[in-house]
Length: 423
Ligand code: ADP
Ligand code: ASP
Ligand code: MG
Image (tube, rainbow, N blue to C red; front, side):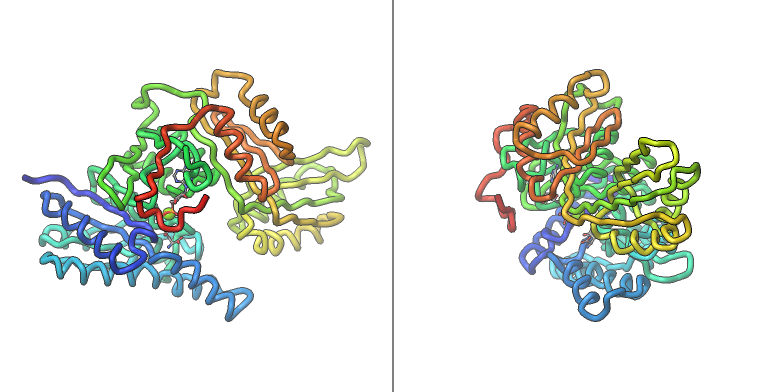
């Protein structure tokens, strides 16, 4: 029997200790023995990336981004080398490769690099030699020949990019939950597993906090026609397949509630009310690679009074955002800059929303009934997002999940090794 090429990606929890790492190796070998050519992408073990980041901040308040990438890229290398040893003990030949050795070429944006090209010839020749290929996720080599990393959760994108480059029939993302759910099952235990989800919806889910698939991996898969199957590394049950819009049979009004607790709000006061100012501010942030999410500008009541502008950025980017804004604030004579780091966001996503008015009203009413104050709102044709206090996010997620009746039978079985699953 001969199958095609499969890319299998194992996340941090799935390789956290020796037992789990050997479990992943066994799973890889099973796939190989079933006749597939196998490329496996591994994440750093457990919380290793968090640990490396805090190591860096113990040494320096502003670690050099290039050196940060040298440091962070080590986590996934460890996983791959250990997994190659485990596969060898199972009687098969495996070769571990760094992102650079695997031919992943990125731009030079350290800690958030984008993949520009995948030169997969070393992988394909190893596959031709009958080897299992293990690739360190989350990293590449820049056009200036420096090691780069791809942003948090970036191993998903490594896996999808390799799947596209080697023409894999599927990119399997093995993780610590059985698939993509109608809400984060850590917050809503009765959340329903989605058998399929469209790229359109998954993009909105990932961009609004569903970290189960990194946003760029979903973008890459859609652009290159890669089939993603997100599933549990702890059992063999089928997970969630991300499919094109045409393949989804129905469009429920609301598919999922997503959330983030890591937002920060920046408010600029005394902003000159003249053309071009918003452009200058947005350009400064874009050049610093800060992703601005929601933006509100309050026009002044009288014609020549200054305006106020607020926007949200990921909390991790707040320091960079402030640094990028400082010269613009001085140059434009902006009155002041205030920040609030305690922001979160709750969103609902559903392709069926396009043709149904009234969904926003239900979201706002539900949050109001739970005494949750909405600070900012943004919408797209298939998403409604509200910025709220981060400590109210779990309540908001549960309230919306129940208001839109998204619950399934209860998908978390206590015997499953969900590790850190907390209520
Ligand atoms: P990995 O280390 O395998 O990449 P991640 O922690 O990046 O795993 O992603 C899996 C986690 O994503 C789950 O443990 C879950 O808490 C979280 N998550 C958030 N939203 C969702 C969702 N809608 N469906 C499934 N998981 C979600
Ligand atoms: N280890 C990296 C992170 O924790 C990348 C990944 O796991 O996808 O973000
Ligand atoms: Mg992840």
